Image 1 (cartoon, rainbow, N blue to C red):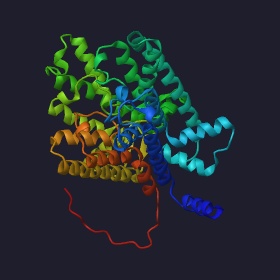
Image 2 (cartoon, rainbow, N blue to C red):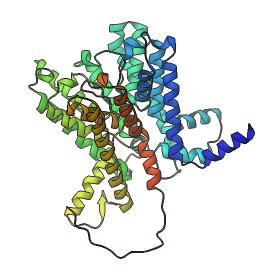
Image 3 (cartoon, helix red, strand yellow):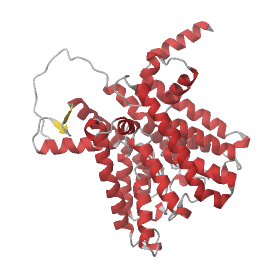
Image 4 (cartoon, rainbow, N blue to C red):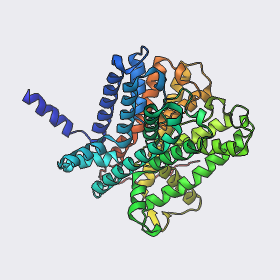
Length: 447
């Protein structure tokens, strides 16, 4: 037995940290599915396919559902989903470091390496301070969000049920999961002032990234903020008005979405909520299946961009998108060096952006192809579903419930890679090998 344990430890120690983290997330998904399969977790018969899909969606903080979370799951089942969301959003290694810290145990260099990969950091320095910032932000935001949401949910559902609904939606919102215990999502609260302020505040804070929040809390001056924070805030400051404004323009006269409201203020309120939720959270206050095709195409692009690194959001990330734009502008200006806010951007960062974007496009294309080949659904619905799964968003035009077992497997795989894929990619991109041979430069005609 000891020999087997030693061999297992030797194999694990030889694995790259991103691979180990991916395995840990997979184990968490299986354990979550097993808990959901328990007789007292559900009110209707469910299959292992239902459980695996739900558990994956929760751990990857996506929000695509094949079950009615509020009706098909008991209180214990809903608690399991909330716990999986919290673990997936917070990060397994972050959670482990918090537990070790509470017990007064050292993390060790190996644990710091895993934590560095989990938080997508380039070094192990300042990790303890970052974890402390994460803990403060998570506890404060989720508790404060739940307390404020009780103002809406307690009057509707009673004291205890209202508190649970507020806590569940606070956890789901901050972790950008998009899970709701209501059958129609947040559509009944489309114009509720508390929901339209608190829920977006939670998922915007959760999706902007812990590094940005750490800079904002510890550095009071804009000049002292890191280049990452400045680029992230710049990208977010552009994408939010763009998505909100374009949603209002495209859907203003649609009788199934904004057109059903007579009040201009109500239309603007729904536009605000649906515009900011699209890149990360996946909540809905209107019928997503009734959107115009043009709006759906815009949503696909926003879901693929996603939120910020070291956050609870998915996608290729806002910083990746901004650096890609900066690189494109620099190319047309014949600039040899990329720079922003008085800081240069290293060529290896640009290469990472190119690799991440290319792999993401290939993954999405292959998934769309597989679902198109195996389903008779509308092409736009399939593309929307895949983009939502990859961006761990959770919005759907109604295709999720119609997926075959093969289709569910494809979406589960895309959700999983959307959550842990960048970790594995980061490992391979960080592996350097000095070239032993130099080759003469060749000419390639591009474009």
